Amino acid sequence: MTGNMITQGEVDHARNGFDPTAMLTDWDTGRVSRLANGQRLREYTITAIDKEIEIAPGLFFPAWTYNGRVPGPSLRATEGDRIRIRFVNAGSHVHTLHFHGIHSARMDGVPGAGEVAPGEAFTYEFDAEPFGCHLYHCHSLPLKRHIHKGLYGAFIVDPDPQRHPEHEPAARSRLLGSEANARWQEFVMVMNGFDTNFDEENEIYAVNSVAHAYVNRPIRLERARPARIYLINVTEFDPVNSLHLHANFFDYYDHGTTLTPTLRTVDTVMQCQAQRGILEFSFADHEPGQYMFHAHQSEFVELGWMSLFEVV
Picture 1 (cartoon, rainbow, N blue to C red):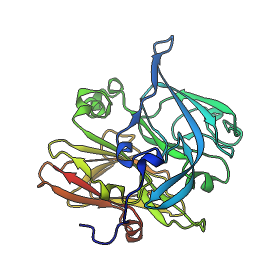
Picture 2: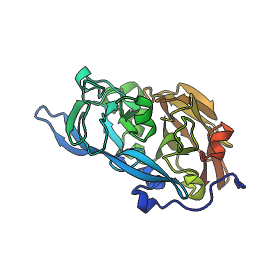
Picture 3: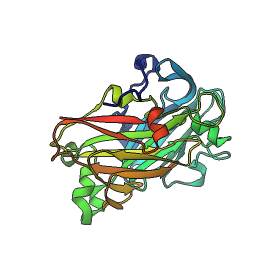
Picture 4: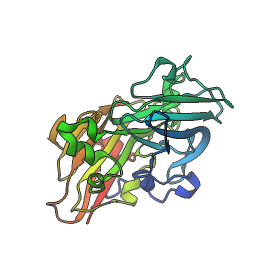
C-alpha cells in the first residue's frame, strides 16, 4: 500500500525495552493513595538513563531516556490530583523534569529549580492543573540537545466531570476508568525526530520513536467505537510537524484544555514544538480496510512518519 517509501526490516523492540504499539495505550497512573485532606495522591518514579535505542532497522541512536524509553512514560492523572514525582538521575549529564502545567517556581524543573546532578535525586510536587493534553521534558542546557536526545514524555490530565457540569458528558468521556471513556479507543502519539549524524538536521522522523512502526504493524481500529488521539510534537530542528488523516475528518482540541472543539471537521493539523492537542474521529461509516495517516511534509513521510489504521 505504501510502495517503496518505507524502511526495510524489523526493529528489535525487546532489545529497545519498549514497543511503539504498546506505547499507544500504556498509561502510567502512578501509585494511588489519599492525603489526610482527602485529596488523591499519585506518586511516580522517573529515572534518567543513557541508553542506545534502535530507531529504524539496524540504525541505533545514543539516547538519553526517562525510564529507559523514548518517549518517557505516559503519565495520566485527573484534574485536582496531587502529583508527586521522584526523579533520579542515573545519566551522565545534569537533567530536570519540566512539566507543562500549573505549579510553583521551585517545581519548574529548570536550572536553579529542580535541576538534578548525576547520582542525585529530587521530588517534584504539584496539583494536576489544568486538564488537557500536556507534556514534560528536560529543561537543562543546552535545551535543544537534551530534548533531541530523547528526554520528553506525555502528561495527560483528565477533566473532573464534577467540575464541569455544563459539559459533563464530554468530561466523563475523557475520564480514564469511566464507563463513558471505555467506549473510546484512545492512543498517545508523540511526534519526534532524530539527528543521527549531529548536524542539526533530522535523518529519521517517527511517532513514538520507531520509523514506520505503524506501517509494519497497523493500528487496529474498531468501526463501532470512536477514536481519540493525544497528539504531542517534540520534534527538534524543524519549526513544525503535522498529522493528516486520510479519507476522514476530525475535531481538534488545542492543548486539550477545552471540552468543545477549537477546530471542527479538519483533516490536517500543524503543531510547533511542545504544541499538543486532542483529535476525535470515527470510521463508523467507512468500509473496513487500511487508512493512512502521516505528516503532510513529504520528507517526513519518506524518513519514517507514515502510519496506517487497520479499520475492522
